[in-house]
Length: 240
Image (cartoon, rainbow, N blue to C red):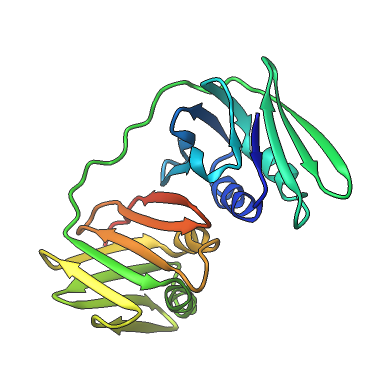
């Protein structure tokens, strides 16, 4: 049985994952709860971990279970503020109890999903940008005025975000400061889907930072925290 009193971060996490992944395997082990999967278009890989110490109770046998993420998201979204969530497993079901003024119970059938363990991209990134979530989201909105893609550049300590279209173009840039920090060993330029990137960061807290790890013409690694959990995305690049 797993028990969690602070349910907000779990709701946001499942929402972020289910935006891309229709189904996948939840892994329960001595480290906590882990999820890793790639979307059907093979553009986004998600890697998510909740340390067992984050839970108020974590007493469950190691397990590897397939679930429909869209259905799980529907259920978890029904948690009310101050509800405690209890999660348990049987051979065929994932059981969730929401305990507050009412006790509400849900059962989600387990499904067969490939047990193959995905490997994370092993590209060594040349630049790391730590940027305030709200700033980054606003820059993405600017870029979406003119294009469906965005070009990210790092030149020394400078970080650039550019979009170009027939109707116009936009550019945002920053050097190291309070809300943007750049570390690089080489200049970088790479292009990514705007819609995917906006979906990836939508659950990031506006007061927190997002970490981007970049290499020219290579997948980008995007990391941020949701509550006390960490979520990582690997976004495939587009041709320049």
